[in-house]
Length: 112
Length: 385
Image 1 (tube, each protein chain N blue to C red):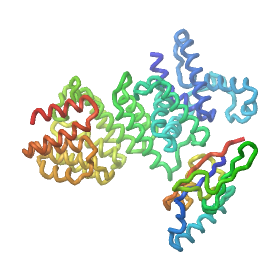
Image 2 (cartoon, one colour):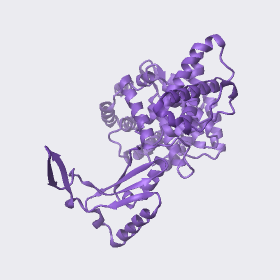
Image 3 (cartoon, chains in turn brown, green):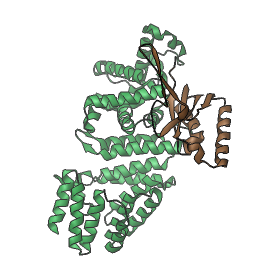
Image 4 (spheres, rainbow over the protein chains, first blue to last red):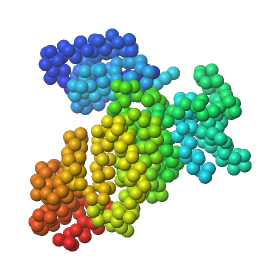
């Protein structure tokens, strides 16, 4: 099965970490990306860079900022391949954000 | 009679079908079909020697038939790993007992707790949806939705039908024990005795995990408590342990509970359920050894860090003859919103002759009481002051 791991963290949480912690977390993310069960992973630029798009009456409308203005924001995501939810949860728990005050939402990808 | 056989076989049959079909809903449908056929045939033909195997075989054959009929699912038939079987080929040794897998699936922490509870009672315990709804005082529609949501999540999120590996097992066994204990603590409401149901589940779990002391610990705890249920109320009134009519205790169940506790101790069990069962066993003694009870509660505080357990330890200290130390222990606790904190303080203050303070504590407890027996009990205490 495929699962999306959606990584939510407080805004600017990266800056709160010490240099060493940040480097360690970064290395862990890189290692995670090397795991063959990780299909694809991406770190996102901060929400200040987000543009929200809707099409209304054939016109494309843009607004500055993320879809929802919340304290915790989507900071990155991974698409993984796992046998079942237990394996997906184990992988999610390995993401540094999960133990650094963030939350990883595990969502199964629709099977076709 | 037939109903009893059905209740007894439901969990095993359903577990086997979930394992076979990999789908809760299909398994439930097939099981229901097989039980319906049995209900028609058995009164005439008699109950087969191995009703479980008969039901599983019949249900499997029906499920295969249905899969074959449904053309869109035709491909799936080729994926089914088990060859078609006829009824007389089947005997009990062929049917793997997959109830433990079923229990771990139903009590998976990724499910909402109320869903875990409902699904365990439905799938493992074999209770009807309507019965579970009545036991939890919700509408049948609500309970059906709860079950549907849990089953849908199992399927879509890929919750495994498996006994967790060794590295996950301790946590996940805790979750299973918590669900069973929660069912037990719902107690007797409406027409179903959930206490007896929880004991059935506990017995099943201990039988399936014979090397797990905590499974025996929980079973022993529930049995010893359940044995005293008839003495706990006098009409609408709560009766405290020391005032209970012991002739109403189920001595046989207490003895059985103690034997189960001994098994847990032999296995080296020193966990929270084993300790609680040991306390319950002491409290079911002819004369209660309160200093020992207090020492057991200390151990339980170390294990759980729970202020409620510390409150119980204080009660045991008071019973052992030291209400002043007990009160000091209670006053260190931060449990202002907890009814029994205030009723315990009231009782300790009363024993120390501080009646005005006792009255205030009982009043505060009364404000927090929600059930009629609790309110009546506290009102009586206030009158006696």
